[in-house]
Each structure stands twice: as C-alpha cells, then as structure tokens.
Length: 235
Image (cartoon, rainbow, N blue to C red; front, side, top):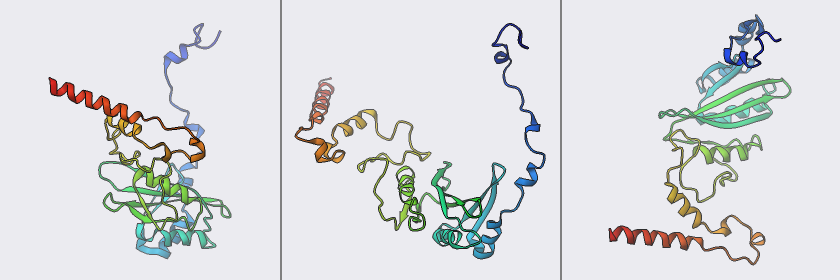
C-alpha cells in the first residue's frame, strides 16, 4: 500500500507542495552577483552609450545600449579579442505594451570565451528604426525580417527587407505587438473577403499552377454582398 493509502490519486488531491530549497547551491547569490567582464569593458569603451545593465534569471547579464550606436557597439563586441562574440544565438524583439518602447534583443555567445551576453536597444513607438546587423552575422538576415514582420521594426540597410512570415499584401498590422487585437484588425467577414480575392499567382509558381484556371470564388462573395445589401434596402 502506498503512503497516500489505497487511493493512487490522493497525492493529486493534496495539491502542490513547496519545493525543497536545498536543491539550489548555497553559493548561488554570490554566483549571480559575479561581475561580467564584458559589462565593464563596454562602459569603459563606450561611456554613456551603455544606458543600463541588469541581471536576469540569476546569471543572465543584460546590457542596454544607445540604439543609434548599435552597429558600432556590436561590431566591437564581435571583433575585440577580449570579447569575441562570434555567434548571434538569437535576434528578436519584446513589446511590453502600454506605450512603452519596443526592445530589440541580441542574444550573443562567445565560443572562444564560453560566455553569453544579452544586448538590448529600446526604440520608442514613434521611431521604430535601427541599423541592420546582417553584415556582422549572416543569420541576422532572416531574424531581422521576422522582427520587422511581427513588430514593425525597420532595419535600415538590410540587404533583403521582404516579408518572411506574412503575405506581402498583409494589412492588419504586426501580430506580436500588444496593441494587435486577438482576432486581427479586420472583421471575420473582411478577412474572408480579402482571402477570396487574393490572386493565386501571388502565392504559387507558374509550374505549380500548370494549366489550371484559378477558381473565381471572389465573385461569389461579391454576389452575397449584393444580395445582403438588397435585403437591407428592402427592409
């Protein structure tokens, strides 16, 4: 018989219990407060362009930089032998809503030095433009296009600023912004109408289309709209 008795689900009914604090090493606070060699080096080299520094999740050092100098700072972090952040692990953005700036986030990793650094640049909603770093890390090409698609950030000097996730004619805004409605900015009827009116040639290569003629479903939607208007006028 188990500790909870004959009922195997008794422990589930009891609910969660506090975690054992001893699972964390006793020296964790000291480890979290350990200085990061790149932070002081950045402050010494760039001065006021290093806006702020914080530690997240115990050991993740985050440096906020002047967005006007992002390429200069990131170039130095990559090229300087004492830093050598040769790997861009991720490039994304964060919107906390409430009119606050959108944060462009660079997650860096130095393979030779085996250390990480997160760099952020805050952009006010009225000035969502920052220099592209695709020239520093090739992987930034698609990552910046994703941020542009989802958040509306413009990456000046990007070599190929086409949309990457949303259709070129998508007009509802930026889906990962906090001000984006849950169901989109258009009504379901308008979304359906726009989908039916899309030209198949915009989404398919000629070889995929072959000799097939696209279905003219848009005309059906138009007829339904006309019938609906006639009924409304009749009432």
